[in-house]
View (cartoon, helix red, strand yellow):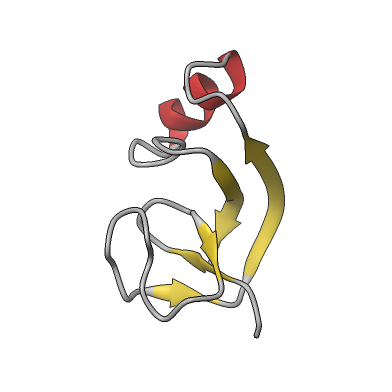
Length: 66
């Protein structure tokens, strides 16, 4: 199954619905990837500065989503 990124929180999933925010607005066009292990890390905080709903749970996140 193809990985898609949520347009709201940028979480990358193979499901039909985002498991983090519940959105069905997913895109196959996403670029650059960051893996968040610790949601309190500096990288997670920086990601949330530009994408407020991102990095709330550990996982893979897209930097850019079309």
